[in-house]
Length: 208
Ligand code: GRF
Image (cartoon, rainbow, N blue to C red; front, side, top):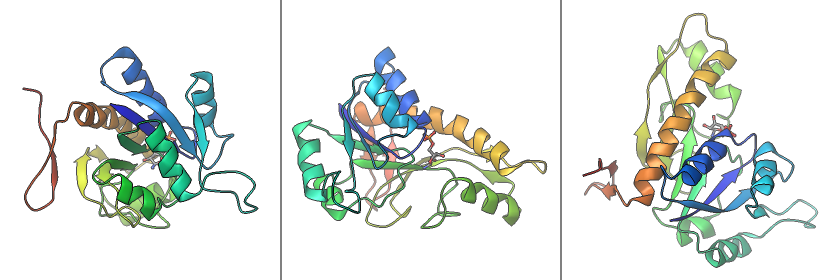
C-alpha cells in the first residue's frame, strides 16, 4: 500500500515506520512526506531517503506550499491510499478528509479522550497528565475527522506515570510505545486487517 506521512518535527515515528517498510514487517511504501516545516528533522530524513517532500500548508506570504486542493491532487498523483499523521501540528483540511475517508490516521501521546484537543500538543500533554495525578498514560492512534483529536479510536497502549517523572521522562516512555504501536497499526492497515463495527468503531483483526 502506498502511504504519505505528515510531520512537523523530528519525525521519529516516521523513521520507525519507514524502517519497518524497508525491512518488510510493514507491507507499505512511503511515497511522500508532507510537512509545514521543510527544515525539520523528518523532512531532512525524507530527502536523504529520496522520498519526495511536499510543503503544506501554504506560507503566509503565499510564496511556498500547496493549497488544500493541490495537496489532494498531489497525493492522488502519487497514488497514496493512506495518510499517516506523525507529529503534524496543523489542522487537516476538509478537502483531504473528504478525499480520504477512513484512510487518515493520527497518533497522539495521551489516552484519548483525556488530554486531547487544541492546545494539547508536545510537552504540554505530558505536563497536564502529570499535574492531573493520572497514574497511567500512553499513545492513542485514531482516525482523523474535522476536529483535533476527536476521530474514532483504533489503538491504545498503557504506560505507567511514575511519581518522579518529569514531562520529558514521561514523553520518552510514551514515545517508545508510539513507535511499536504505530508500526503494528500500519501493518494491519496495509494488510487490510481493519474492520468497522456496526456502531462505527474500527477494530484490528489479528493475523489468521
Ligand atoms: C509524538 O509524541 C506524537 O504522539 C505527537 O507528536 C510527537 C511526534 O514525535 N503527535 P516524532 O516527530 O514522531 O518524533
